[in-house]
Image (cartoon, rainbow, N blue to C red):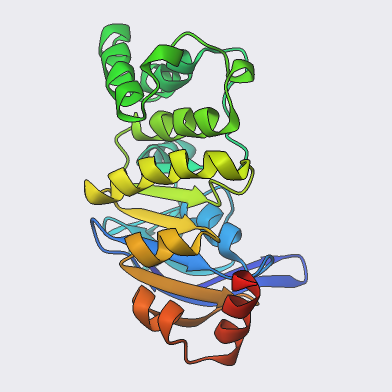
Length: 250
């Protein structure tokens, strides 16, 4: 994934002011920064839940949302945008599971509707993923009967069911009780060890320190500094980064 000079405005409010960011296959990139710095907006642009104001984003060398023909840019057809979006998995703060569907039905839904898999193939894949996130015993349980941590693990399984080329995580543990955070981070660490390409917005410093290949610190719509976890978290250069990390540690 590569983003070049990405801008996003909502009316007169400029939220992203020229973001350059690159994620190589198999890498885990963590985005840090205070609330309102533009991290979630950036993820929503990658997943085409918002439209770029300026700049370009490529996923697997394919320009997303727009295409170039004869030197001119055109918005992609809705069907083409849906195809691109299906290759990008996104896990939200608030789980976003279908409340009227069981855990296994949540995981099979996208496979049946978007990728047109057979019910048998979709369910086989769902059982594999339930096993991967440690929830085979909850296959026929509805979201309201699951803990927050269990719901988030199902949400991760649902995203993985689409065999995405890139996984986006938007503060996946922020809505969880502290004792449930670890079970979700464990699943994410396993994905990282398996080479899943990930962009993670989080305030979990231990995860960033242990798992990230690179960390980007954002503030006020710009990347303030980036580097390895040791560089950004252990030896930050910029005052804004130092102040943020001091607040988080307190």
